[in-house]
Each structure stands twice: as C-alpha cells, then as structure tokens.
Length: 345
Image (cartoon, rainbow, N blue to C red):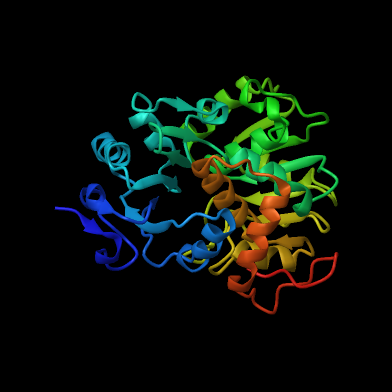
C-alpha cells in the first residue's frame, strides 16, 4: 500500500516508509535529529525560487548507522519514482562509502572528498559534493580580498570543502573535468582531534597538489603548534570554527587562553545556538561572522544539483533574499560588521 504525501504526519519519515511515498515529489533530508530543523520554515520559499513543487521530509539515522542502513536508504531513493533526491548533512562520508557502487555517477568533488551532500535520483542515483562550489561563491562576502592565512578548527566535511574552495577555482566550468589551481593560495592550518580526519584531509591535499608549506595539519594535542598557528595570523586573515561546537550546546574549539588576533575575521559556520566562538571573537576585537550565508549556500548548492540547475551568483542571491525573512536574530551583544549593519545568526 502507498500513501500520499499528506498522510505522512510531521516533518520526518522512516527509511522503511520512503518507498510508500507518492504524489508531490519528495526531497529527503538525511540527518541525525531533523525534526526541529529550521530548514522546514524556509524550504517552501526555495522550492518556489526553483519553480518546483517539492515536499521535504527528514530521515534520521544515528551516527553509528552501518552500511546496511545507508544502502537501504539509497535503494529506497533509487526505486521510488516520487522521490527526487536527498540532501545529506551529517552522513556525507558513510553515504558515499556505502553506496558508491550504487551511483551511476558522481561529480569531481565527490570523488576527491569521498563524500556526498546531495543525491539526485531522477535518472539513476547521482552523487554530488557541492560545498566547495557553494563556499567559492560566498567566500568573497565573508572576507575580501582573500586572506594570507586561514586557521580552521575541524578537519571534517566543511573543512575539506573550505580547503578545496581556497585551493581551486571550483566555480569555473572546467571543474567538472579537472582541478584548476587558484593563485595565490593562502597558507592553511587545520586542527582536529580525529587523526583519521586529518589523514583523509592529507589525501585531499595531495589530490589538490598542495604542499606541506601550504597546508599544515595539527592534532589538538599539539598545543604549541595551535598557539603558533593563531599567533601567525594578522588583520585580514581568517579563523574558522568548522567543528559544530557552539550550535546545540555551549562550547568552542578555541580555549579562552588562546586569544584571536584583533582584526582577523572569525567565521563560525554555525548560525544558531550559543555561538560561543562568536562571543570569543567579539571579546578579542575580531570581526565576527556567523554561518547564515554558509547555510543558505549549502542548501542552494544541494538543491540546484538535484534540480539539474546551475548554481550561479544571481541564483544564490535569490535564495538568500527569499530566506532573509526567516533569519534568526543574533544576540544584541555581538558587534556590528565594519561594512555596516549588525550580523545576525
């Protein structure tokens, strides 16, 4: 028995029920705890921008889910004609690893990073890693001109996308065929407690033809190396929180003893929650930028991939404008951005 979309109550659906979806084309939102996500408020506006009558439902899987769970999900996407595709958040790496034999194709960055953040299922399963493109389009609005140094806390998917975006011209049409070196490239330091994540990032470094002089990988146990990376930054450089700390619970990868250099841009890829990293940045007289633009651009990149629509700067501006009425307000104590106006999260 199949069920029309209206019969699925709430925002989430189990993997086992995906094959019963019919009617309005479905976008599955794969995460860990998606029920309370902000995306459900803004998604209808983005579907309107694309001119597509899509529905969105969350699919929750624990971070401990095994390959069988991911293959069941991918099989459901492949066999259910009413499902247009999926946006993947927390499970980018294992979905790629578990389902790479099921994909009829993946884009270049999915192959390089060994992850997917979007899956199209209209003509066989196709996997995409669009975050490098999304970041390339928004980095100038975060910090322009490009920084001399980048220090990134975190070495996971977001950090990998940041590395690729700064290392290559991901927005050029040729990116479908080869990696084009971006010149000049900043010196980048990535800090993480997970040795496997650092090793995976090192593999991407080599594929992007980056040298040890251009990229430094630091384990969190190397306190002196972290201090040296931060102290080497100057006004106009970029320090990034790509760990997720400060979103659902208080926390920051930056210990209070390690102060940010005044005048650097401190970019927290989170846009809601306690945003402890942002508070630290304000105390250090750094330029605080939240993750709202990253949130919008990430979803724009994924949804345009599923819709087979090119992601351009003009289309991204339409995504941002349609989402602006739903944007949460940043706490009043966060200082104004020097270009004018208070940044909100």
